[in-house]
Image (cartoon, rainbow, N blue to C red):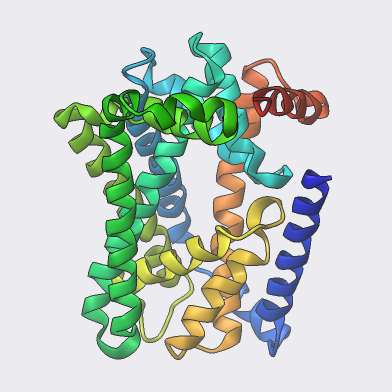
Length: 332
């Protein structure tokens, strides 16, 4: 029942955002803009998309170091599989699938892998909020100071959470309330334990610095896709790199909401909203969002399916198998 409601919410939100994205748009103008795309920029966008996967793999290797030795190429493939399945299945089950396959391939527990993925998401959130807050300072009144300061404040909160989780293990072991928590709130206890396990790598200063640097590098790399996409469509005035970072942040915020597989609707609405705010017309904004989304979707999904078959799986029975594994993992 819970899963059905989550799927229904994702469908509803995506369709509402799709309606916004397509609202007040002249589709003949959209087709005209898309037909004039400068395809010479396409290799750069594809290369940056592949680079994104490599950066994710290197960062995940650092986070997994306390629990498993893993090759970068193996983790690159698992990252592609996870993101590819997110584009094809509901409830972002690709992230769970990545943990599931990591457990099988690396010979570690499912929760050991999933805990590092939870820490990844927190690092992503903190890095993007910081980059948005810093880059938007150069945009003058285009981004309100309140929004900029709010982003930096939220980033500080995530960093405090990461620090607290990293240092919490020994302190919690001394608390009687923590010892009783498994009986009273087993899911809360498990979640905290997962975060502590996944954050072990951050206790080593060198690894923590590497994870931080790669988290920033990931988003700075992805912003190149948004900048390059604007060049491909011949934006006038051009989108500066700091603005590309803000467009990336808007897209990431929209995609974080419950969504259809591939986040269709959410992505287009988030990108259109900020570009219209910057003064571009709806047709150019939607053309840009559609072009970028299709390029990124094609690169990640095709790689994900290719590597999924390399692992000996196909989509036909994968959903059922992952559903069973997820139900088993959710038991107290």
